Length: 185
Image 1 (cartoon, rainbow, N blue to C red):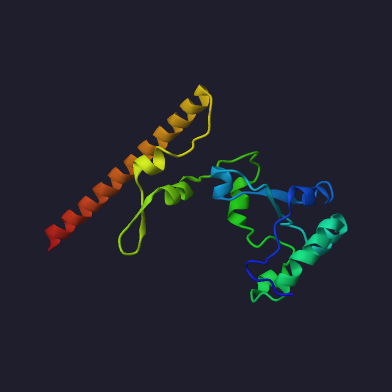
Image 2 (spheres, helix red, strand yellow):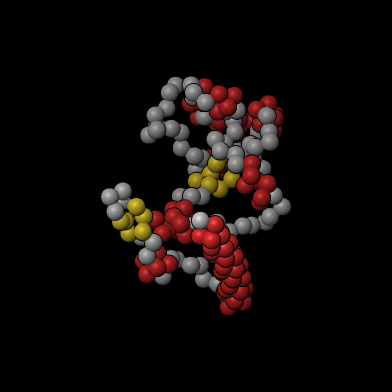
């Protein structure tokens, strides 16, 4: 069976997820829109680190789901890695997994997505344009306690001062380089 983009199998719904084995490696799936508006409550297979046989032995219902809904599309995929590792999520981003290892939670930056949606466009190429009033001031920041706001503010100040120091030293380096060039010629 060949799937077109429109007919590709949907991610498991909450009800379908609940029919799988307890502890099956199914995780909430979120994209920028899920974070900035109402979540779709979509779920995704995360069998990273497991062989197909391990998935079959431990999670037979999940294995069946993947065999029926994912494997047929992967069998005809031109990407050899996707064909051979059909039970794994398409993107396993090992760098991100290493970075997040051991963390209970992490912050997802959705401001860039928000800025593209809320900001304007400019030029022949219709390039995105960042406008502070439309992109920053309308961003739906979460409610937080004063202590949290203060801590985030302090961290933002540290990042900003680090960026400023870095840009000053880069400016000095470029200025020195430009002077050397002028003096030499």
